[in-house]
Length: 279
Ligand SMILES: Nc1nc2c(ncn2[C@@H]2O[C@H](COP(=O)(O)OP(=O)(O)OP(=O)(O)O)[C@@H](O)[C@H]2O)c(=O)[nH]1
Ligand SMILES: [Mg+2]
Image (cartoon, rainbow, N blue to C red):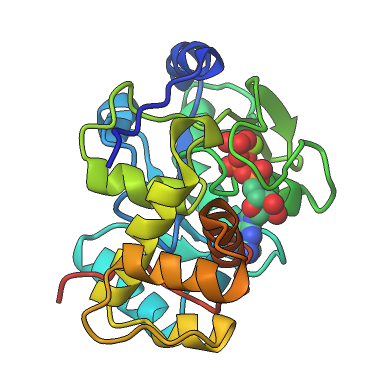
């Protein structure tokens, strides 16, 4: 598989500015993609935020089965990480996140009070990979659309402060990714979920990797249901893509690959997790 590398200029700049702004921030919201919570965790995040409180937003909860969601929440608990499941498209779970920001920020105003200063709004930043739903979350926290949010990676280009209420200010930031995607298994998952830009990869290679993953996870029933083309035993992802192209897309491999990825990303194949917590 060709190496996936993607680091557009606006992300380099955003990362620099994000680090500058961090000193002004009280609380960090880390938005993860529930389909790939491990691969969508930025490896440098903890180093950047130091001792600041972190709230993990387990976003896209609607895109994985309830049972898997439960397992992940138990896993986060065992790691002593505060994780809040959310669907930032519908708004489900968003109230609890607002509350958590409030609670995490209480100490800020206690300290100010002790020094004889007026209270000020809690400042939180939303950090995560591209396209995980950071801007959607901000819009839901505010209850109306203030920042652009759309179905492709790299929508937010600049840092922007948004006042959510009398007591909370949020910083929307472009998605950040490591300079080098050292772990190519993770990079492929990010590409499958469209959490990195389209320029980074080839559709057919990513579709094949996706099919291999489904076959390995014994999730091939999703394919049969969607395309009425059943993977035969021993078939590889590549075999299946060819079969699908033959049976449904006039042998057009690229079209089959695009359709497959698109169906998964839109949730049309069903709720499919690409990572499971280790027991
Ligand atoms: N199904 C589902 N879709 C979501 C959820 N959260 C966000 N989305 C959708 O995902 C797409 C990307 O959302 P954005 O808010 O633009 O993501 P972002 O993290 O701000 O992306 P960048 O600005 O590109 O880094 C949008 O089409 C949202 O409607 C969710 O919980 N479930
Ligand atoms: Mg955004």
